Length: 236
Image (tube, rainbow, N blue to C red):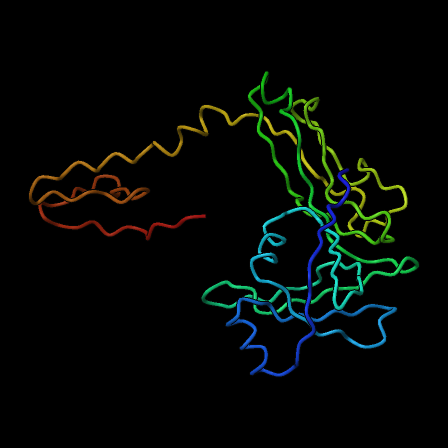
C-alpha cells in the first residue's frame, strides 16, 4: 500500500456567477468550491489551471492542502467538470476532511512484478478490478494499493480480502477477484480465425444442385433442366 502524496495548492477567493467564472477561465484559472462537515459555509475560490492539470495527471490518490488567505484546508478532490470539446477543467469540487469523519473514496489498484505463470508457463494476466471503493478516516487514506503478483502461477488469483485492510472498510465484496493468471491460448484458438470456407464449385450450364437433405424419390429421375421439389432446409 502506497501512502498518498500531499500536494500544496494556492487558492484565491472568487465571486460567484457565470460571468465571473468565464473571466477566470479566460485567465487560465479553474473556478472551485470546497465544503465539509466542519465548514460552516461553502468556500468559493479558484486555482491555477496548469497546477491543477498536474494534480489530474496523477492516477494515485492525493491529499491536497489548499491555502486561501493564509488559511489551510486539507482536502480531497471530489469532482471535476470538463469542457466537452477542449477537455479543459472548468469546475472542481473539494471535500474538506475532518479527523473524526470517515470519507468514502476510490483507490487505484496497481500490479507489481511478473508472475511465474507468465514467464514459465506462458500464462496471461487478467485484472478485472482496477479500483477499490473504501470508507476510511483521513489519517489512514491509502494513495494506492500495490499488489505483488510475481509468485502467482497459472490458475492463481488474488482477491479483495488479500489486501491490507486494517482500519479500512472495503465497500466492494471481499471475494471479488483483483487479478488472476489465465492459461495460454491454445494454438487451435490462435489459428481458428484463419480458417475460411472453401468456395463452391461452379456448376455446368443447365445443372442443378440438390439442397442438403433433399433426395429424389426411389426410381425417380430428374429431367434435364427440371428442378426437384424437396423439403425446405431447417436448422436447429
